[in-house]
Image 1 (cartoon, rainbow, N blue to C red):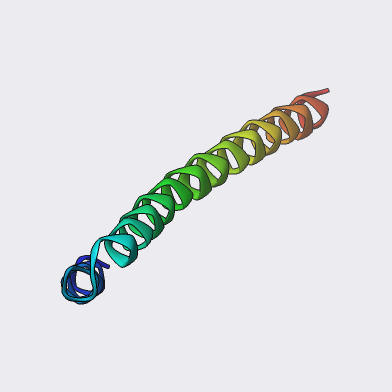
Image 2 (image 1 turned 30 degrees about the vertical axis):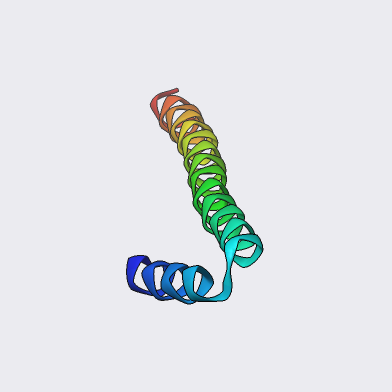
Length: 65
């Protein structure tokens, strides 16, 4: 990720300021996208774990009865 960002940044610097601004926005948006995807993934995993644990407790409670 960092290597390609550096290459894109160097190419944008060579082609002028407007291209540099577009490239910087692209790099920042890709970083923000990665953060959002990670947060969503952790949320789904947390909810799934809580659901599975609740189901496990319910199953073990039925086995004791």
